[in-house]
Amino acid sequence: MRLEQLWGTRVPLIQAPMAGVQDSRLALAVGAAGALGSLPAAMMDTQRLARELRALADSGLPYNANFFCHVPPVPDAAVEAAWRGTLAPYYRELDVPLDAAGGGRRPFDAEAAEVLEDFRPTVVSFHFGLPAADLLARVKARGAMVASSATTLREALWLQENGADAIIAQGLEAGGHRGHFLDRDPARQSGTLALLSQLGGRVSLPVIAAGGIADAGDVRAALAAGASAVQVGTAFLLCDEATTGPLHRARLQDLAAPTALTNLFSGGLARGLYNRAMRELGAVNPKAPPFPLASAAMAPLRTQAEAVGRDDFTPLWSGTNRKGCRTGPAAAVVQALAAGWTAAG
Image (cartoon, rainbow, N blue to C red):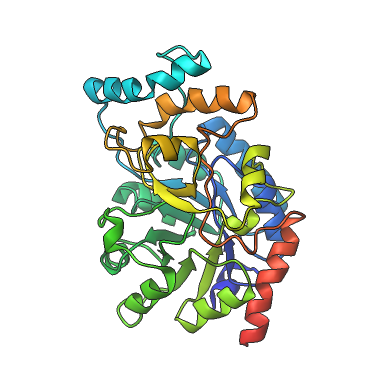
């Protein structure tokens, strides 16, 4: 059975979950337009998660609930001190107390699983592998399709062997955090079409292409390379229903602006537009604590800089391909992408 039939959508398109720049409003708008909307849960406490899931469930639309499943690292005081020392000049410049701290990202745990058990999401997707077997069993007991990101063939095979129902093939073009969990060196990863080619004939599960898909032509290319569906994020960042901030929105409209993988904002590699922090500290800084600990010291700088209209320390997540990134309703983005299936079939 085709994925859109399993999901109950008009087209096999997932709006990528994008923590920090969306809530259930974007997922609902995408769902109403005939695709699968996603709710990113990594930065939500259990109370907010329950409220957002309730809004999706009450709509009667299919939806995807997305979680991170990283293993939180043990904080190291020396590493944290070195990182804050690196950032100290910016703290002084912006008159921010050096001990100020921001929030982080939580993995899928028993508390989140308990909240999820009150709902029946169509899909539950994961980033950074899969949760522990007992937690995964609780998700599957609700009847959800389980999908997870793979950046290499090795990761895709591991997901297939450990309980995933679908593979999200995340190419290097994708914005936001890399979903790698076995092959962490981006030199071992590849673009979306190349990754689809590597998975062809080796993976028996449905494959969802993610990264660099911005218009109908990109959809057709992904289908021709063996994808059963596509996942698109960057094209939705300027939509009316997204919560993308004004500084981020302004930068996204420069289609020629370069992106890079950086660890500055969370400690994990993620693709975003260049800004002052990336230029002056280097996109990848060895002093940054491991994911997600780097964000605690960086977040206060972001808050203070944004208050005076600067994006110096803002994670400006973006994929490499922004030609489909448009203002207006999310339904228009879905419609533009859906033309890829019409032309293909």
